[in-house]
Length: 255
Image (cartoon, rainbow, N blue to C red; front, side):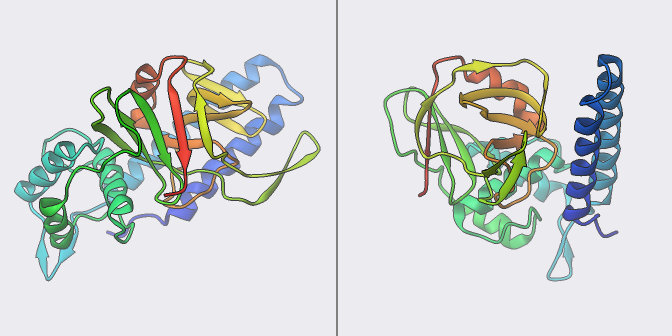
């Protein structure tokens, strides 16, 4: 069964957010809560449809079986990619990990597990960070990935991200360009759970500069698509927030 086009999922999410923002400008807190519940329910429904539509991928007329999926899940974790459970299901989290792997290795960003991807996983090495000797986070804008680096200098978590797309947008009557800043920053403040901004919902945001944050989002295309924030997959947002206390260094660069 073919999966729903990614653009349709993104469009549905963006429409729901725009309706939420529009309603909160003229209605009370109880309406905000209702919209957040509706938004979350809609997002889960879309995600379920998307997950169930993702059938095992065929390659060279051969299906990828449970054993191969187990190997892929295990190998992704061994390389530092933030995957799902090692259970042979190759769920949405593991597909996001595969996308991150494809980004790092310069492969087509399909998120599809094929025999060719299995071979690439078997021969790959764990990515190296730019800086070593202290715990920090690195965000590679060209490859659209996030590295969590430990004190030993090892990259122990890798996530796909979607950052600023460079387009113009209007917020509070002012025209801005969707830009993710380059440089070295620190986590300045954090919010647990959802935060409603004028541009939409952010999940467990960790702010690094004004309104720019690393946050969970239901829309993580394989290309830059945000207003400037660093979007990460929802499944990792809460745990990543716990790994980034206030004061954590965040280095953003073009590789």
